[in-house]
Amino acid sequence: MIDILRLSLPITVWLAGFSAVYALQGLSCSRHWPADLDARQVLLAAYAVAIVLQLIALLAVLYAPSKARFVQTTATVLAATALGAAVWTLMPVLATSVCL
Image (tube, rainbow, N blue to C red; front, side, top):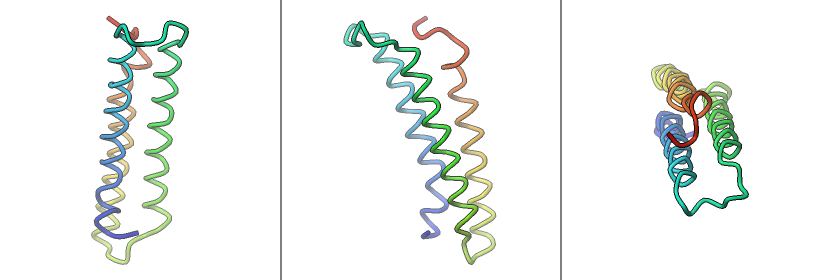
């Protein structure tokens, strides 16, 4: 894995997951959402996919280590932080109603 990709991938995956989940939430509260599609189930599935992608990013950093110790340590910390951020910032999907 290229070092710059190793450093930027976990935070980029978090940003994409955060954007996708909350875009889905906004869309599910609009009049364009299909009436027969349960928004809560779609949001929970998107939450699960975002967390799984973060875990994959963390495992990729751990199981394909960099030769540079600083890069490996920084990438591991960033990947763990991005996983924590994904769990924390997407938790309202689990805890609150879809449309307030």
